[in-house]
Amino acid sequence: MSLEFSYKREILRKILHLSTCIFALMLLYFGKKICIPVFLSLAIIFFALDFLRLKNKYIQRLYNIFFGIVTKHYEERQLTSASYVFLSLIIVAIVFEVRIASAALLIMSLSDPIASLIGRAYGKFYIFDKTLEGSIAFFIVSVMILLSFDFSSDTILSVAVLCTLIELFSNKIHIDDNLSVPIAASILLFIF
Image (cartoon, rainbow, N blue to C red; front, side, top):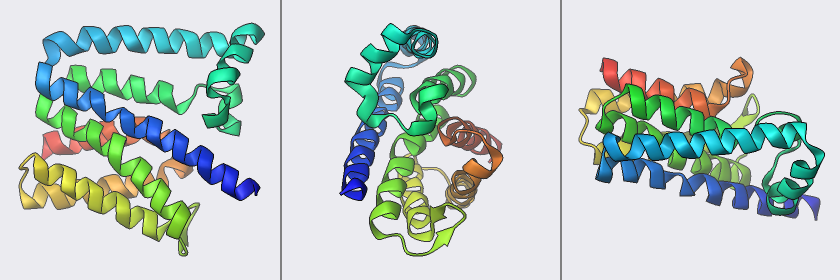
């Protein structure tokens, strides 16, 4: 029963995570000039609320009413993964050109949650605390995203493999993959 609830909670988390692809699509459609002020405003608001949640019991109770079901246990005493989504959104959108930033943000928004759902549902072979099946899903989704941006074959394979490895080792290096994956993807796309 608790495993089923946990999977339901994970599905809700991943639906929220998947919805962040709207930011990459906004960036592609509207460009930096319009999106960066919007992204920056949203990030400041979200960081402020997340920080206040940690410091104020009333705000924490209010937060738990709306988001308690999707908050992981370790996030109760630190910034949520969503804060790292907004941080990477700002960094990547400001530093990199639109095509690179959008591709990297889509990898974060799509590859990661799909990998998690596949890994939890079908994973049998574990590598550290992740599954081989989830990592394969991450790689395939990343390749599909990069193909849609018409990068070269070498770039697609190199970036997809390296981002898959970064996601696989993210818990070992203690950097939230919502920050490490899009920044690494952007740097690698820029280099290649």
